[in-house]
Length: 214
Image (cartoon, rainbow, N blue to C red; front, side, top):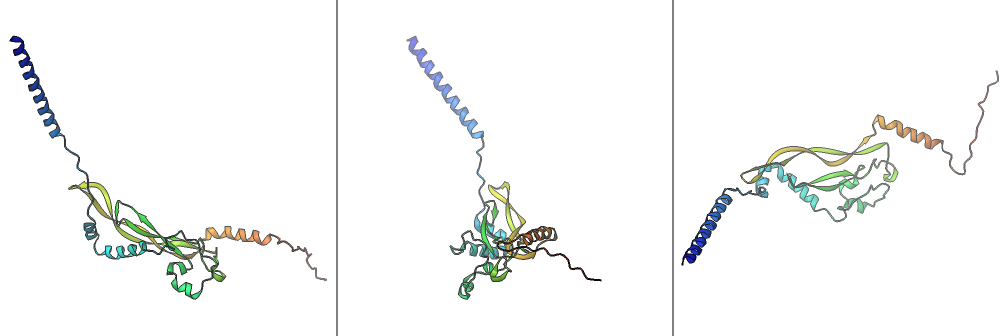
């Protein structure tokens, strides 16, 4: 009889300890705060924050995103290419320029707009020579314009990422400019070296200066 009473007491004590331990674990788990993920602001709200300026900008880069398949390829400098009138009429202005350029899409998930078209020059020089040949006396250089964007700050406010307005420079096209003075001596040296080379099949003649009879 006593053994049964002892066994019952042991079982009761074990149940009580298990219950108290479980209650303590629940209290501790309740005290641990859960890390809430920081969500991004919906696109509609970002567009409203961006203001009226975003309308023109969005149309511009949406148009660039819908480029023809040929224009999305990595184009090369179209130097010396003779185009017919029909072909020229179908090409965009950026490929008919003496400093032709193309577009590539810059993507940054931490800004708004996420996608921005950027221009890059196709030629090192300018297509000023006969039949559109590339002239090295000039160079093609990008043209930049200020561009307003919303940049993610990294802080979380009310469970949402915070953004701040900032300005960046974006290349929008290319133009032709003369070489700088510091670049011209090297070019003249190369031209003088080329002029001293003897072409195959030609002979060189050395003449003595003519002296006048006094």
